[in-house]
Image (cartoon, rainbow, N blue to C red; front, side, top):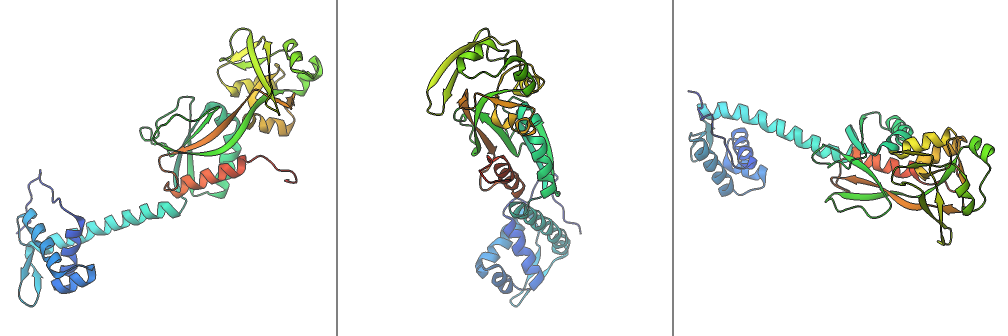
Length: 314
């Protein structure tokens, strides 16, 4: 006789009821099953009755000394034991994701960070964690993490992040400073005061329109405003960076974007005691300290790799 359940029906109830049934089927008595499960004998009996009531069929034949499986119970036991094994495997995999950094990591970042900052970092991270694959979603649109299946978002802002309900941790505080190529400065001269900036070619992102008022602050936070007339405007810092490195003029750039070109000698800092603004780079994830190990590993790697060099570091 086959166990019949309507297609539209589900067993429902707690997985613990199924575990109680399997324990009784394995051990042959309710008392032994209760001892294994750490429950009372009455509690296990109520689980069995509830399960049989939902199914509408007797799974166990009870006697004063023992219980045995009915024909329907034997068929149900075989499938249930297999299903519980799959559930246990899935639970173990989920628990392992908290401690073992592996799997697929999906990261979103602005275009400039994705093009000028992340390539060597992702390469280094993959060398350290070859078991983790990385997918980059580069866009200047702030994607919703849950809706777009994003593990980690990199967000740079001059102020506080808007409240999104997600966990944000600080990776780096940085300056937006002035940079130009050595070739440009050789041809046009090196400005030695903020006032001298008005005589130079400028490359800026498009938020600076017309004759732009540029406010600089020195190390004592004293401001000065200069008027500059950009010759080139672009949509993002990635292209500002490349045009400046090609000799197109002086450019305001976030320090992380300019860092590699600065180290390689393609850019130099102009008026190093002055800066345009300051900002913070955040790592945003669905869960902070409870994030999967792959997310925590990448966040920690970025924080270490992006840390400013200290005197004596090589």
